[in-house]
Length: 389
Ligand code: NI
View (cartoon, rainbow, N blue to C red):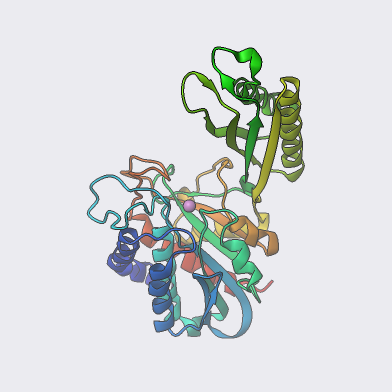
């Protein structure tokens, strides 16, 4: 069966590329994926699958094999980034200010391909395959949470997902047992001082000076409060304040992100961030307002599901494809599915011949990865449904 599947996947390649480029030309950002969703929906319906709309522009489509057995879900995100694409690709984005610069166009094409292959094999497997097409991965609080609340995982025993990964050479698989991607929170600090003339600082409380202290002193959290053997990041993304060179402004706004892998460490960082921001500001006569927003939880792969994925990779693509990797500090709302049911998320290498990283205006991935990923995801579904326990 594997040989047959391999050949069929190969001959599907031109259509996979066509689908992917179609999405790439018409990217739509979080929760506005109307055309994208309609196109996908038509594909799944044509293959005879009932489709249930979820979370606005998302849906789940269900493929039933022989009666009985288990249910396995495969998930793709469907949103693009609010980013102007640059470069000279023949299939460059035609929607100004939006681009598929994270490869979600590829993820959709892969699930379309898997659906095509599996729908011809309904008689060859027992159980059901649920396709989860999820909006808004890029915009916290994200689409996954809403999908789950509206029933995306109903009756599902396990879930698998992939991300094409530009830092890995094409065809290599990176996966981590346990925590693989970070919790990603964000914060905003408003430092309120007292404005005045730049020549008379003694009459003011200078929020620029206070904010500068905060940028420096908040770095002490990771270096002094966090266990050196644990991973954490605190980065600032914006510093905003002032209008002209000779006015001390009334307030300065800072924003940034915090990344961690374990909840107690996250709580420690949040607490210290508030204490330092408020304490340092007060000591300099200013006041700090802190807003801290909890983002996606850490993505934690179920160890047994990772063993299963590795076994299927060995059999379908070859053992040499497995590349040991370290966890990454990026966030991913696939984490929510893994909080509910067992499963695993993997990085599928697609970096050959590419120059720019994910979320860069010139980002692209190697389309040779498309049929290989279809083969792997199809095999994962079939092999999972064969399992007895
Ligand atoms: Ni992404």
